[in-house]
Picture: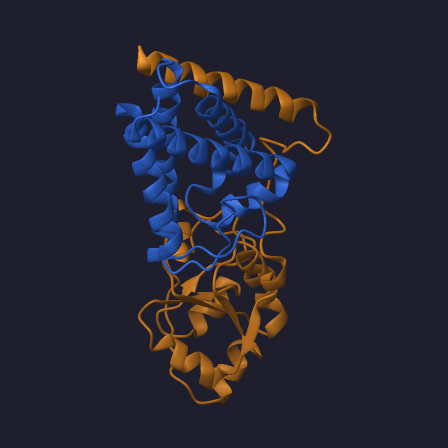
Length: 137
Length: 161
């Protein structure tokens, strides 16, 4: 795994995996606060408690597999696909918040994650694109 | 096969999350949870004068809510105001949608306090709410435009004097 493509693949999967793992752990620490962050998006707020419970372990599981799986492991594209789907959902949530002018914390890494802006939207789309690339890599 | 593995990952993590939530003492109450402390700092809606309210009303994105009993509403109300007494048992989905999309929400009652219950509950949902200081009498006293007539949609509300 010394090719340029191999190095890129390992870099992307480690960064993406690390980010998901960190985000999941930070959200897991304060589930009630995270539920309120989700409700603040005013996008299906009735789903806030279930999402607050489910999203952190999903992020941790996907992050752990992305970090641990070797490049030929069949679980790697599976985790990358899961991450792509997750980022697609996040992209819809943050985009609608920005378009509606909702001034709320992003909650991306638990509480005090900074406000939702177009930068957040671009970051989520970028992570989604990186995940999608990993599915095919 | 990739779809199967992805589904297995997501399902397994979801199940683990639900189990962990059930056993941890600070778990989220899945069915009884309410965003009661959303945005504590804005949980109390700010007050504005009738003149400030009038300029707010000029914005088409503003939603005006009258929380008084329907008899008062029929006698006179701010033009375009919606009747939403705090005793209304639940918000219709359509109303909640309107509230969510409003750029500003002006709430008034017969006095400031009457509007507070509704306004603060909306502010806790981090909606952009303002209370008309002094209620409808202050609007009238300022000589601003008023409407009167039957309260459409009041059927089914339980608020009486």
